[in-house]
Length: 231
Image 1 (cartoon, rainbow, N blue to C red):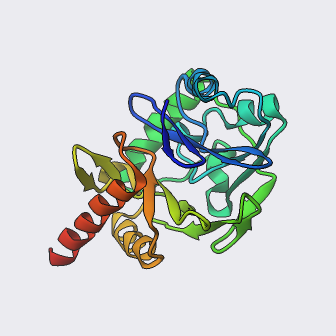
Image 2: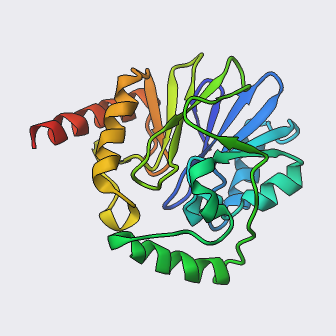
Image 3: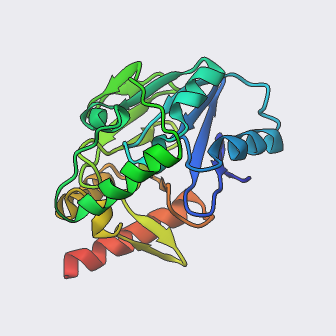
């Protein structure tokens, strides 16, 4: 399990990555992974010698099941707080609202919540656009809607790294938009890419991507934005 940037550990999974951010007070899990996420997290922490450091918080980018399945377990196991976008509250409660093509995602999640024994939760910290978490020198919540209503990125201000959740996917040297069935509003998602780039991060880290440094994922996102602007 690799360190992709100083202070950031990437937990790799077949279809979904998630991250651990480290400061001098402890560790913070950015999203909770999907099937097998707990085991993968434990393995990743051991591989870096971080297994004895306190996990102080779990920070959520959005409410899709593949990002929140393990959140309740992580919070209880570590005694950690949960911080999550306010506008995705219906997802955490297990009653997400989907419309249009994204109803397909709703159907898949309805089955998944039963089969995978999802446990609903209520965040300790409700996040709105511009809120700051006292992690390291500060982590700022950036509302990037379209994938879900509440979808957020998180800018680690000191490092200039933006955790982008499912704003885009990044594989094989190319960034792409998420499939329409996964977005509540795909056009709004495109506008959120513009919002993310306007922040001028020095690097970005998506939850669906291959093993590449933040600077490379940013280069791919900028190329995607150029293509979208031309079409």
